[in-house]
Image (cartoon, rainbow, N blue to C red):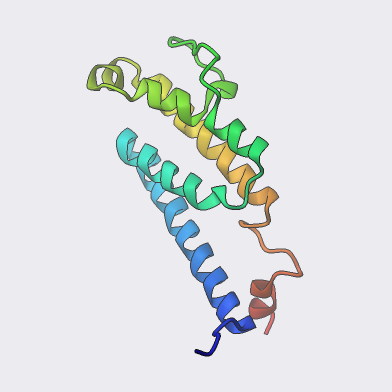
Length: 138
């Protein structure tokens, strides 16, 4: 059976991966604009899973949170914007209503942290060595 691993197929897979990431970022923007907590949270989780293959163990722990730090329910901080803490807030309909402002704050900062990781990995704005840069300069 012939192997189909060529530079073109690798490029096509990378392009498909980046298109999926772009679609997820667009969905995050839409859900954040309308304040749709559940769909924003779910989209961020998918985005995180897609990004996790590029992250170090320390970066994964930073985004996930360790669950040992108590969350200030009334006034959370940017540092508390972790997947674990957001899941704690979103574990019931009552919490979704009672802590709506705090959940939106945490989702916003989790998304910012994910976007920073993506930028650090060169996934948002291409570098001059990126194949996509070559395409746009043809």
